[in-house]
Length: 177
Image (cartoon, rainbow, N blue to C red; front, side, top):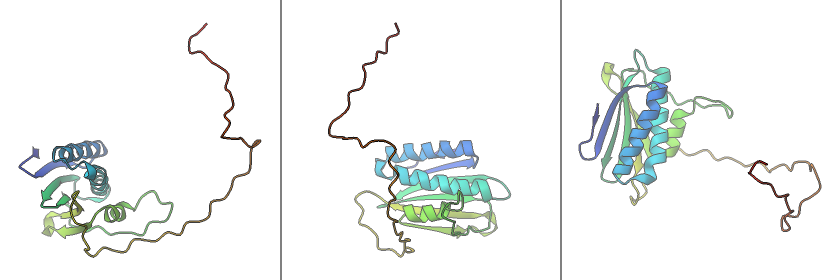
């Protein structure tokens, strides 16, 4: 079921990998319809991470509802599932291939959170400022500062090439014969 009253859109689904891509496309299309194109990438990435968490962790089922709502100068994306267990933000190892979803949501959003819904589940949400909205100074966890390591030079494989003077390549034809 998809509903489109004014600035609200809700989609109920099973959080399966094939459906996650469909919901990402629905969110993108709705944001284009609302003329919020600059938010598409961050909203699509955030909803993908939240739905992936439902797919991987939610019990007893994978049924969930994705809602996007535009109020004043904030877009809020939320996912409601039936698992009352609250998510835990983990410190993932540098090369880990999982465990970064909520950290990514925190990094791409202005704010995010979890709201328990009693025994019927929880809602995980994030908000994005709309284009032209004044940046918020809301409390956010500090971002990690990364120290860049100097780049190591690779060993030379052949003679140096003068890029100011291109070499001539032999002419080739795409026509057989």
